[in-house]
Each structure stands twice: as structure tokens, then as C-alpha cells.
Length: 210
Image (cartoon, rainbow, N blue to C red):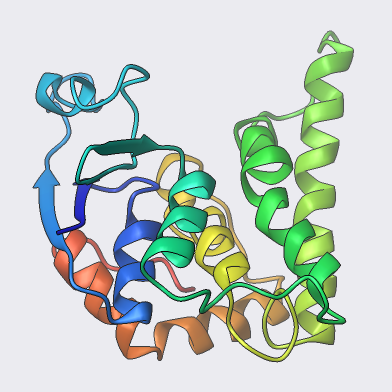
């Protein structure tokens, strides 16, 4: 059986949610963060050479990286559900937002919390500007369509939602000025699979949907 190793308050929530949306059987193993370092405990780091969440085990396969795991589960266990076919008109949109989450938006979120200074480096300024641009792009996209790839929820949403919600545990952000994002998060929060996943994975944490 597919085993999902979930580190509390981490990107591995995506994988729990994906399994719930696909209604596939899986075993969930929860891990608490180290109380001092707030990092993964030693037994979690030992699962994969890179030592970060998420990690799944499927028979002899041990796989890390959110995007890789999502694609693997959809292809091997989900019969292609929640992906977009290459011949679909919204295929490019699906690909963009699926990869935008971890490749472009998430890496610059910490810079968004840094206040401008007169002696800041060009790299810091550029990262902060990219952070703000990423939120502007998300707000604009969600004003055009109900979900990132278009009319229906896809794996692009599964991977993007963490950046808009739980990532704010680590980098607080006021999103009251993003009405389209807020409306979108209410749609996500109304999904039984999302609620079930968050309750199973992080029962003591209230999802950051506002």
C-alpha cells in the first residue's frame, strides 16, 4: 500500500490532500517537528537522502519532492485524474501554475517579509519585488477563473494552495487585500477532501484560509 510520511505543518499536506481527492487507499504516518529546531526529526530525515518533506513509500519506491510525488501518484494510482491532458486547451495553464508554486513563488516568500532598507542588496530587492509580483499574478488569475488551470480543480491547485495558506505560518502575510484569493480559499476550504486531509495531517492547526 502507498504510505505517505507527513511532517506536521509542511508541504506534505499536499500529498495527503491529493490522496483524499483521488479517494485512493493509503497509509498515513505522522511526524512531529523537533520542538527545539522546528525541523524534521531524525527518523523523518532518514527516509530519503535529501531529508525533507514530503516523502512517500510505494513498494520499493521511495520518493521525495512535492511535484514528483503528485505526478507519480496521479499516474500510478489516480488513473490520470486531476491532471490535464496535453491536447486540452488549458494544458499550458495547468503546467505553468503546477510548476510556478515551487519553482518561482515559494522561494521568494521569505524576501517578501523583509522591509526595504537603504543598503539592501539588489538580490534582496529583486526577490521582494518578485514576491509581490507573484501575489499580484495569483490575484489576477483567480479573478479570471475559479481554479488555477481553469474551471475545475486540478493538481495545480493541490500544489499551489500550500503557498497561499500554510506557508504563511512561516512567513506571515496579510491577504485581506486579495479578494480573489480569499474567495478561492473559501472554495478550497469547502471541499470535503481538503478538510479531511487537514484534519488527518494537522488536527491541531486551523487552516489559514483568511
